[in-house]
Length: 330
Image (cartoon, rainbow, N blue to C red):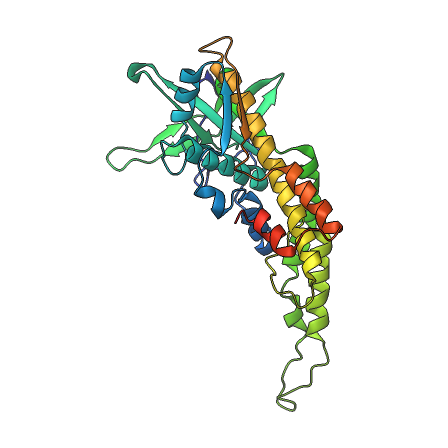
């Protein structure tokens, strides 16, 4: 096994790699696809910015003692859609981190230096095989084979990469939300596993009785599943993408929406705070006194305003449409 100090291995899948027993101790493959309800929740919860804010500008307040260094760091962040607008890039970066946190509980970015080009790049990489010991970050890369079209396949030995902490950006889910999602997702996994079990209650047709009578009440089965779904999502406030109001009052829907949106805003503010801390740390290798702080402006909804809206709704001083307009940023 080679031990090297270098940049992280950014490959996400090890489909063509035979993992040994030692590899499996450190490498947890993320090959399992999320279940039905879990997949919908992950998509909805990570969609922090509504369509209204996507058309706005000056969404973030960036305070720094070195504006040139701040612009340089932000300019070379690698996101899915390359944009030179700081607001668009920050918005996309926050949602990328949120998606990774909701799905995997962690997110990693690394600052790559290119001295010959006098350039840098900040890009995400998979957390597969990454672990820390005594505040030193390692990445175990298993033995692998690189296939080439124009030459022979090349085999690489197992590597233990020591990652430069000064260039590594690590984001983790806040404990309160992590606990909340863990409890919810366990129930969602059970519900998804038994989602279609009701079909097993259909009686089998026989030659003597081709059209058997079915006494099983599927409405009770569906209502039981919905009740379990709402009980599991009580803390997160997720509505399961059920928008019909035949069984749920508008008051119930509004309180659920406020709770869900509050959790999203808490996650957004937490990510922005971490971004400021991480950019400050990696920027100090260029300026020892460097500091940057990132916060949402008044163009975005805030937790204190949401709390005030909920208090007015309890006193019947706020309308349902006002709640929808605020939460969806209309």
